[in-house]
Amino acid sequence: MDWTLYIYKTVFLFIILLVTLVVAMYSTYGERKVAAFMQDRRGPNRAGLFGLLQPIADGVKMFMKEEIIPLTANKKLFILGPSIAMTTAMLTGVVIPWGGTITIAGR
Image (cartoon, rainbow, N blue to C red; front, side, top):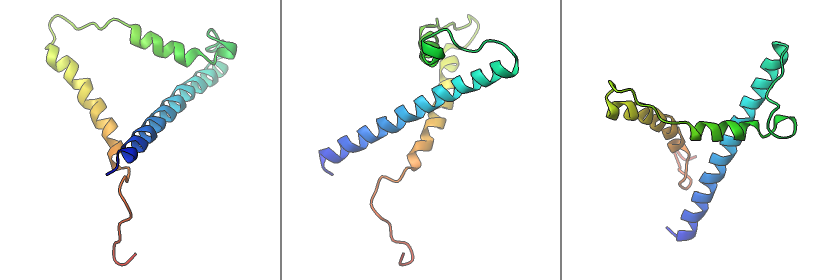
């Protein structure tokens, strides 16, 4: 395969990942706004104009949190468990057809 094809596929993969993350961020934002309306309270409106930067603030907050591993926990399993769950979820992208056209039963 040509290197340009690898580059195109990698760029395409990152675009898909970026779009997926942005959709997830603003779906959560919309859910929080609707929940605030239904509960008659103020919604996420602290960061940016109308709270549009709130998902980014939530992401920064998540990555800045301190990792706390309980003293009595098995440290390897404590890290391995969520890693296996995330790997399994991310493997769903493996079924994206990257190859050429396949002919089955003359079609």
